[in-house]
Figure 1 (tube, rainbow, N blue to C red):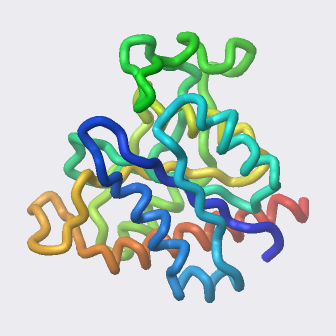
Figure 2: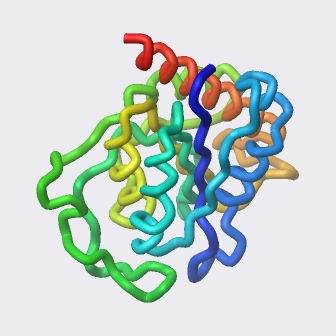
Length: 206
C-alpha cells in the first residue's frame, strides 16, 4: 500500500488532563495487527487542543500526502463510541480552547462548503460492530476542535474518518450500553485503518 496512514488524537484540555484519544492514537501506533496490515507503522500525531494546532500541526501533516487519515477525539458525555459521518463549516465563539482562545470566526472556512462528508463512515460502523463494539453513527461532531480538525482534514484528497471515543477506557466491567476492553477496541480500529488505506489506494489508481 502506497502512502502512509496518519492517526491523530488530542492532548489534554481543562477537565480532561489525560486525554484517552491521545492514548488510543499511540496504541494504534504500536499495534502489531495494524503494522502487519499496512506493512509499516502509521504516523501518529497528537494535536494540542487549540485552534492554532490546525494550521500549525495538522495542515503540515496533511501536506505530507497521507494515504488515509484516522482521527480520534473524546466525547465527554458519551456512552457509546460514535463514527462521525460529516463535519460542518461552523465553530463556536462561546467555548475557548485549551489555550483560552475561541474560534476566530463562526464559519471555519468562509469560502468553503457548509459541510464535508466522509466516504468511510458506513464501512467503519460495520467493521466495529463485527468486532462486538457498541457504536453509533453520528452527523454532529460538535462545534469544538473535533469538528474543526475534521472539517480541515476532509478537504484532503484521501479517505478521512473521525471517531469519538468514550472519556474513560473500559478496562474493568463494561456498561450495559456495550463497552469492551481496550484490546478489542484497538484491534477493531486497526481493521478500520486498513480499510481506509485500501480505499485510498483504490482512489489513487483511478
